[in-house]
Image 1 (cartoon, rainbow, N blue to C red):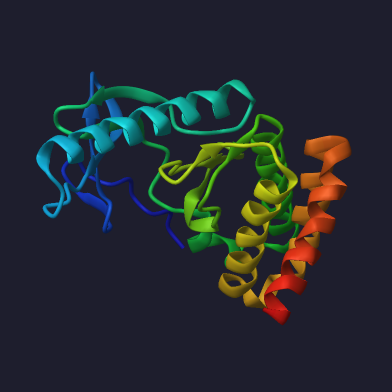
Image 2 (cartoon, rainbow, N blue to C red; image 1 turned 180 degrees about the vertical axis):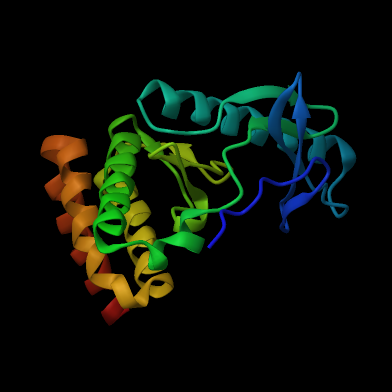
Length: 214
């Protein structure tokens, strides 16, 4: 099967309720233009303030993730007035689209990379807020995490466990045939986070018990 072609300049990559991602070029470099969709029900001044705050937060978390050794798109530019963040373009396919078709060894390698990346994020006190294989891209043998728009700074066991539990639920639902691979994710996560990793993984069971009997 031929590799998918990169998105053409001007092509919409994704259109969601919060933002539209469009492929383009920035100073000769392939880029993604992430434009936040204004909410008409808010006062313009409030909408502008919220947009600026969220843009600053996402850019800050992306830089923090890269400093922690996690693959993440570089922030190329920010336009607060246009509510647009310009990010490095990493490729046409998310891990979600390729994971189930990978050979066993490569699939488990991707699971290890995902677990290690999440562990490094948590070690850097970054809670991603939307961990899915749709928000992961493989490039050059390295896994990159994208879309930190729901992210925040946090280091409590509960915050980390909720973040990791969300990835568990998404991973096992999306990749049902390979749901057992999540054990590989957890092993790599604990190795990356260190002493606190086991506590976070154990806390997931506590969250699941609470939800079961709620």
